[in-house]
Image 1 (cartoon, rainbow over the protein chains, first blue to last red):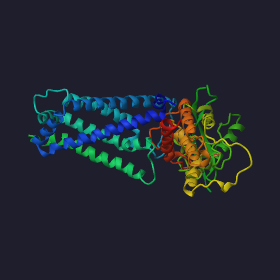
Image 2: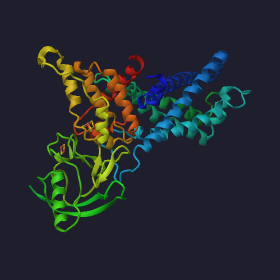
Image 3: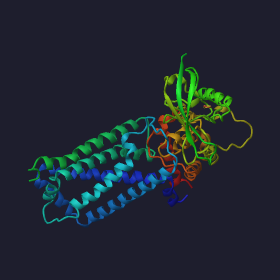
Image 4: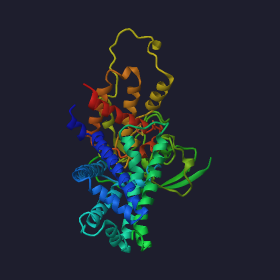
Length: 215
Length: 251
Ligand code: SF4
Ligand code: FES
């Protein structure tokens, strides 16, 4: 069997979802760690941003890689989504869960779509914007707007839901499931997602609630 | 024992090409000691005497071991009771006056033949694609000649409990057959007898599953919750492992 065949199989396609999901998850965690510098005041946040930019082409290479990973994740997600719909042409009149699925697992395609839109908005707000003012002011200009601030919190909530299933699911897909630690992985995915979402949503919430944040 | 009366809404479909629809029936008095299939038997007796077409449904052993029976009852494959086949589901789990909606298993790979009867020969195709061990005949070997640890034997036996009923496909939001295929691949991958064909089996069975039009697993765990034999999704993880290993490492 050749490798293109592997990536065309159901397990192969899901392996791509799993690996790209893991990479996106790692990115989210580093992004989160970096953003925490906001809590140490305007200077340290700006210093962190400048430090990132001083990496120069390395950061562009990283962004390019991230883009590829992201496109793969979305592309395969869409493919799997439509294939799976086709696998049951006639729906049930009464459709109930037998107790396996969770709210998060059932809504993966929808939270995914929500996050997809959010990433565009987020990039427009912070990346493709006028960088003659400092990053701290860009944050303040954007997130002091109540609507945008609320939208960020909602999106982070969707992201948390998505990862609360995804962080466990990616292990199962790669064949990593053992009674000794599967429960730990399931709970761990939820705990990391809740903590991550709480910290992420504190950035828009603080900027909006405390007018002197990052000043 | 007590007697209950139920409102039934049953999927009726003349043949695989016909347009199906739900038809409402009154069950008449049903003993709570009856099984779900006996309840339909009683209804069918009445329909036959009235000159109507009885409800077609699959069954064989009626003791939960053959995997022939199965329908989706109020949104649950094999009904709402945990680890129970439809033939072993007793009417005491329903209350007087309940409305029960009964539909066939739905999946692109399982065509409705008539009413509640679905064609699950896709599972036979899957087994034929690798769910076996090849044994060259000769003098029978001594059973104890192949040592198997108790732990492995237990796990293989757990996987072998699968009766091929198809409830995993029916309950999966993606109509995936991963639990069935996972159980079969696990059972044989764990045992020494399954080793010679191990990699080929994983590749062939999974590729056949994809070709038959089953969906892709998205780890919803509905199959495990609906399976009448409590097959664990741990076997799906083993299938994933076996397939990835075979795809990258086997010759
Ligand atoms: S895994 Fe369970 S639900 Fe699926 S066919 Fe086997 S016994 Fe039925
Ligand atoms: S009729 Fe054999 S398992 Fe139900």
